[in-house]
Length: 109
Image 1 (cartoon, helix red, strand yellow):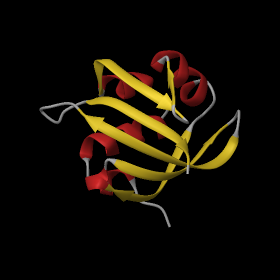
Image 2 (cartoon, helix red, strand yellow; image 1 turned 90 degrees about the vertical axis):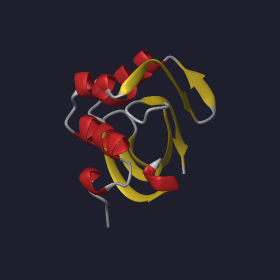
Image 3 (tube, helix red, strand yellow; image 1 turned 120 degrees about the vertical axis):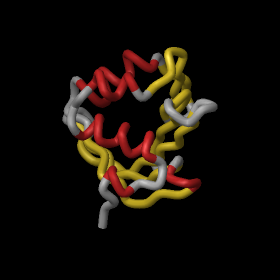
Image 4 (tube, helix red, strand yellow; image 1 turned 180 degrees about the vertical axis):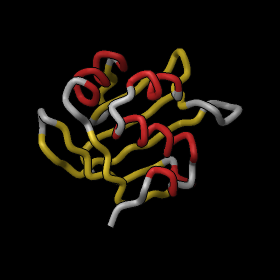
């Protein structure tokens, strides 16, 4: 059973999931702070290069299976054209003021 993005506890995270699933890079980037950072399996990555490769150039899709930490930690069935489907964990840090994501970390769950 999956959780629809609009039903996630944190609306900013829900909007990011919606942007991924709609393949809307502009909407995705609008949800991040200008200096946002990310890591994949514990390794710091160049955010823009990573999102192009792992999300937008490869048809990325997030099927949220569970949430915790007020919707800021997700377990996701993630799939893209490069890697197929895998169970992943996503953790989001929301910048002070609550409107944008300053960091996300993902990796296999």
